[in-house]
Length: 259
Image (tube, rainbow, N blue to C red; front, side, top):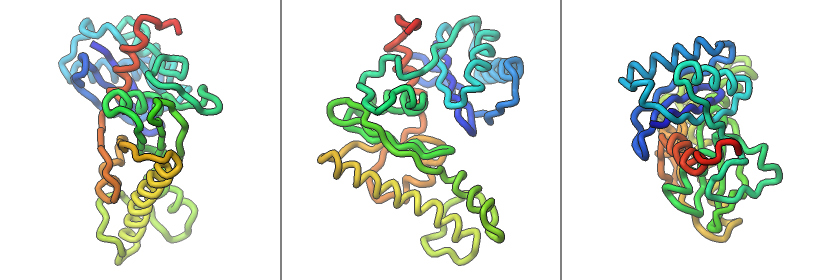
């Protein structure tokens, strides 16, 4: 069984994969102040809650966009599972060519998303991951990762609006109440969510115009369910895309872990 860890700026996702099957997936808050023992306890508890025996896990893969936590989680995993983790980076086999200016700058989460999307949905494909930031990645019909875009995520936008204005509150992101808000909270909520949906539609359209052909569009991330239903473009939502991508990455590289 494969134990996969996705370390994000807001949340850490921990899960187990048995082949193509996701045994479980749990989300905890990212805490850059926590030490390895604290994370080891969390890992131990999550495995026990999901009735997974430590001895059933023989492989570990870690995807991280929080460098300060990468080694801490490595040590925590080693403490509990007695095995070293494969760390996702641009040097690993992915199934496509990374054609950006500096491949080392490509985030591990974007690599994992792209690997999962390319394997499951084929190419050309546009991947939209809606988290702390919304990232958009493009793989063309020749399986070349061309690059993409990064824009502020929904919660990031809400916090920035509240921080930089005198009277606008920080609101929760429930569903939109139509288009025209009739109070301050709804006006902010509708503006943030609908502008994101319009941005996604417009960006996808412009990407396809630049490429000269249409693409499959796949969304993932904790906030995709709020935005995608409001998009006019057909978009597949796959909440487990990154975990699936980590499984594929491990499969492609398990015999070359020193790379």
